[in-house]
Structures are given as structure tokens and as C-alpha cells.
Length: 401
Image 1 (cartoon, rainbow, N blue to C red):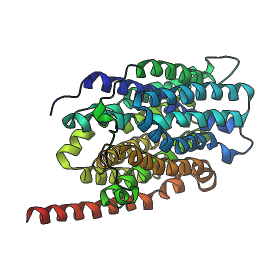
Image 2 (cartoon, one colour):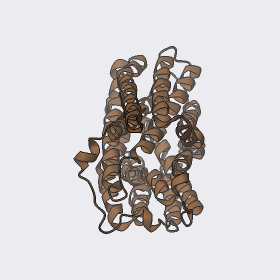
Image 3 (cartoon, rainbow, N blue to C red):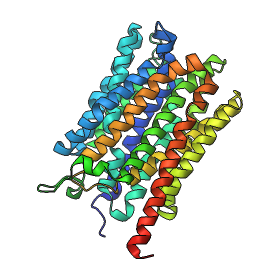
Image 4 (tube, rainbow, N blue to C red):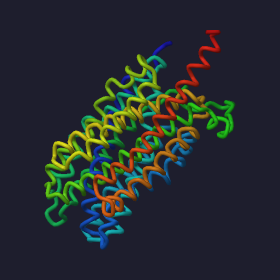
């Protein structure tokens, strides 16, 4: 198959803009709970700003997909970075300056709009890449988080006093500046015609597409894996601060966690091609279960480090594997609604998880919070195993084996 025009430059733009977005997302995960605890009248509401970000993602992810189906990827991504990234960063800064919890939460809500559009960077990578390069392109875009693994936590700690009159406000100004840079890069993105819906294409009803077992497993793996990861990740800074760890130590743990999330992306696509998506999904569930068990073994920085690194790796296998599996169940013209429904489900669960994080930590404690995740991880593993066995049986029947 002939290479897609501008394949490498398009993927490079998406990798860079993914990195810039991830700095924003990691800053929110690292810092917004701590700032929320400072501004909120109720400790149980500390993680509400993070939940507001996820709510903004839920509210925008399907409209974002449908909007881009009409106007194209480039204009959609620019819109998300402008309204969500620049607007959300500035409004969050204003909320801190005013010591207004709900203004700060509203700024995080707009950052969720940024995320609602940016989550399609990985799918855009499939649009701009040749078939042979597609899985690797998705992995490379996800790997943009490796750089963000350092920049995000550093931003959340080093830029805290950037504006002396607004303690903790600096990181949110950095988010706005980086979103402006992303807008400039996205003006150079060129999505080939094959990556955009074509007139006259036939689209199956969503009910038919959703009835495929591969769709169900892809969505379950992505949604449950992402929700658990965000819930535990959101609770981690609060749990560490409650045990006397300073923000530099929190940033260190978050850096390694995000490295665990994105560093495997350099090889996840190759692992899927070599071993099959089912084995990668099962490995992801197993690794995530191991992270839960380690988190309950102790509360020194070593246990936090090991648990959060494994949590990140498990998420990567489940999310990249789920995204790769999802790309096999729809046509080009069905892409917008299928990807939109997928991310709508994912971030609905993520919003619930981030909202529950503060309450669960406050009421149950760190150990019980982690153990509560185990049954959901087991469900993902069993569903993947069921689909894998059914798929292999169907293949044998089709080949007469």
C-alpha cells in the first residue's frame, strides 16, 4: 500500500500536540486536587475540579467527534485547544487568584473540553497513516506522554510560585501558553481525503456495530482501565500529602506513573502485532491487579512508586489495546459516531471515578480504595478471555480447522 502523503510530518504534529495536551492533563491530575482541597469548604470535594474536567470531557467528546466529522480534524482540534486549553488555563488561574473554588472548577471544566477534542489525536494518527504504519502511529502519539511525564509534574511543582501574588496559579498559565503553541502547530496538520468521511458512504446503525463482541471488549477495556487509573491517580497526591510527603515527592511519583502510562507505547503497537490484542489486554488486566496488591502492602514512597508505575503500564496495555481493537470494528464513515460513543462511555466512567476518588479516600482510606478496584479488573480479564476464545474458535471454523 502506498504511503499516505505527509505521513511523517502529520504524525509528528500529533505527537507534539499530544505532548502539550498531556502536560495540561497531568498538571490537573497532580495539582487540581491539592488546590481544590485548599479552596473547598469540604475535604470530600477536593477532587471535584478533576471530576469537572472529566465531566467536560464527557459533555464534549461525542459533539467533538460529530463536529470534526462535519468540519474535519484540523479545525476541530484548533477549536478544542483554543476554547478548552487557552480558555480553561486562564479561567483556572483566575479562580485561584480570586480564591473562588467554583471558578477554579469551571476552569477545569473547560480543560475537559480540551481533552474531549485531544483524545481524538490517537484516532487522527490512524487517519493520516498508511495501513502498515497505523498501529505504530497510534502508539507513537500515545508515546508523546513520555515527555509530558517529566514536564507535567515539573510544571505542577516548579511553576507553583511563578506568579508570586497567585500561589499555585503559575502552572495553569503555562497550560494556556502551551495550548497556544498547539494551535499554531495544528494549523499545519493535513488530513488526507481517505481519513475524512466520503459522500455516499453507507453507515450501519450504532446498535449493529455495538452488538459486535469486539466492540464490547474494546470499550470495556478502555473504560474500566481508564476509570480505575484516574481514580487511583487522583487519590495519590492527597494520600501522599496526608502522610507528610511534600510536593516534590508527589511530583516524583507522578512522573514515574506517567512514564509507566506512556513509555510502553513505543512497543505496545509492535507487541499487539506480534502477540495479538487479546494477550495484551489480558496482560494489562494482570499488571493492573498487581498494582492494586502492591499498593496495599505498605505506604512508604517505594510502595507508592511501584504501585503507580504498574498502574500506568496496565492502563497503557488496556487503553492502546482497546483503541487498536476498536479500529477494526468500523468503517471510515462510521468512525465519528463509533469513536464518539467509545470515548463518551470511557469518560463517563472516568468522571464518576474522579468524583468518587476524594470521597472513597476520605471514607475508606488508601488500602480499601485500591482493593475496591479488583473486582472490576477481574471483569475486564474474564471478558477478554471470553472474546479471545470465541474469536479463535470462529477463525478455526472459517478456515475449516
